[in-house]
Image (cartoon, rainbow, N blue to C red; front, side):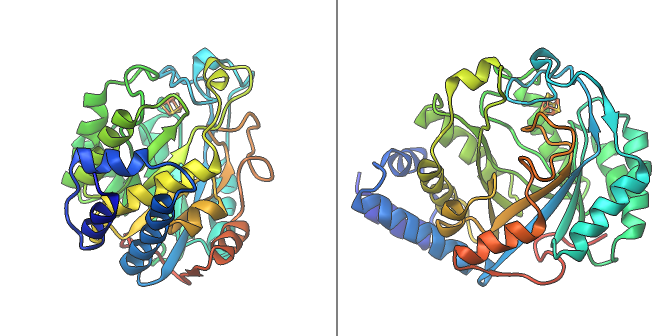
Length: 332
Ligand code: SF4
């Protein structure tokens, strides 16, 4: 298959087939074809965002042993990483959210483990919402939810959610793919904007799996897609499978950007990385509080990066970073 013509089709916003996507993923790193894909991913990312990258900041509200047992997550009960459960107080959550906003984060996310009480989450969120500038979008990163719960998220002031059908869902996680897909639909039905991505990519994932999940992100009609690699949690079964190189991730990030239409403006990568940003990631994530890839309950200064660092990484990759509220999620 001629990858040059596939890239041209993607730049014309043509809908790539599974075979065409597979051909782009299969290209050898550091080849001429790969260079063309990286350049095209970046070009499409710049065109889709009018040249403005964003930094979104996530505050993890709790550490708990989560019964959903996603093997790649430090909160999974099966991984037994954290000896003690803990939660941020409302005041601590508000301080972290406001600090990120003051540092220039374009949107604020609140994340909890799957069994965190939904009503309590709404209460904390309402306090955070009231403390943020009205125009700053607030988004939720929570477990699967019903349409009614999605509507409650809207009423609590959330503009949108992050949600994904992840690689290995139902095999490496205790959650059925059907439940994840229903939540994606519920988000749309409830009027929440959606962020998603191809994650968490590991060395063992086949081209077929990458293609399948990339197409799920496209079908979800998100505000942004993108791709993130799996970070090994020391001592866990999945850590033995290793980690995808940053060079490979940059290629994957570019291919995902090419696979999504320009009507999806954003393309994220995680953890924040200049290679991915150079290859077409227009969104990086700052983190505070708990983090499912960290073994420390406060990720600041460990795996979690600050808004300042994320902005600097994007600038290192040649991006202008948006000042003010995200343009991809309307505030509530
Ligand atoms: S990824 Fe979410 S649902 Fe899965 S174990 Fe971690 S906190 Fe639970």
